Image (cartoon, rainbow, N blue to C red; front, side, top):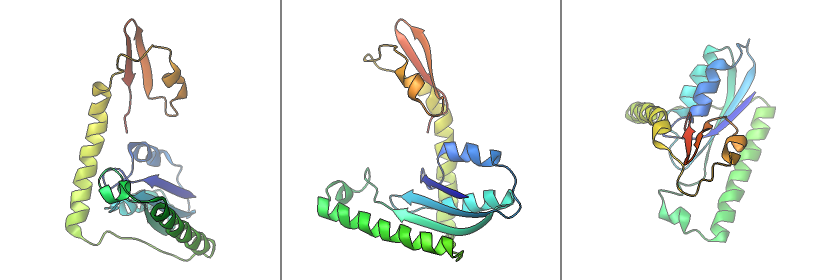
Length: 176
């Protein structure tokens, strides 16, 4: 089993947090984890490893892939095509090494070693999840919405509901 996700507030996105408890119980199924991050992964791998282990999965490999924090780091936004290509080549090389390690069942674990960072990442993630719950009340379609329902049909998680036709009101369920 392989599980990968982007870091949201130093942890898993809400979709992963909701899905993981529904995963069937296993008896030692080998599993690997990977995350993509702009900078720090916080306790994301620790969190996922603990949840998977509690359900009987054997996490054999973990890997973070740092892609740059586009929205935070102006250097990432201003990088040249050559710099972006070098970053992509580095990530590709890291992925190839991980694939080899996983195929050979070489264990690799990434632990959050800084207790303060682990505590802060846990607090940030709880606030993020709370914000996701609150956000469903805050998101509304703007004047450009025609009420056609295309967003409802296209949403892969079924989070969008068209509430009325005049003027169209769109409610977002579980955000994030």
